[in-house]
Length: 150
Image (tube, rainbow, N blue to C red; front, side, top):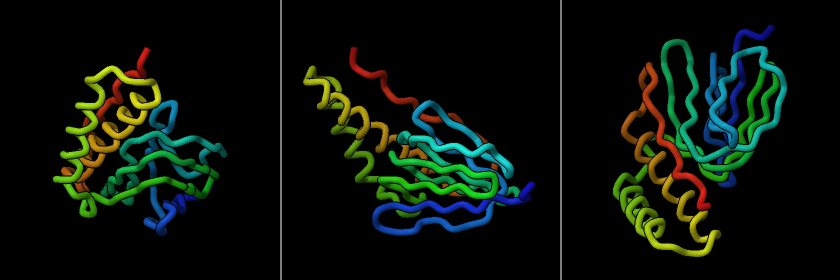
């Protein structure tokens, strides 16, 4: 069994991460899931959320939005629409995006508009959460997405 996982995180613009890590937690479309060396192979859709990976005692947090994760026993490849490190996040812009999304969600609109606003809100909340945390050991609560419109 491998002792490390090779982690690649790729967006349309760049290769963000290429590291050997001990553990990864990924925001899947069906909920968060953890990956350790030797994990069963799987392909999962990504949700908007926080991804973290651990090297020894150090955890690194990223904001991730949509895409796919391929998990193999010795490697994880993330293909994400958006992925950002805490220091790359413009907090003022994320706050403004949150305010706009909350305003859109408070007005009844077509289902497509609601879903777009819900995803925009989740992206902004995730970016704000990741920007405030940087690197540290330990878990904290996650933001929850508003429920889909009935």
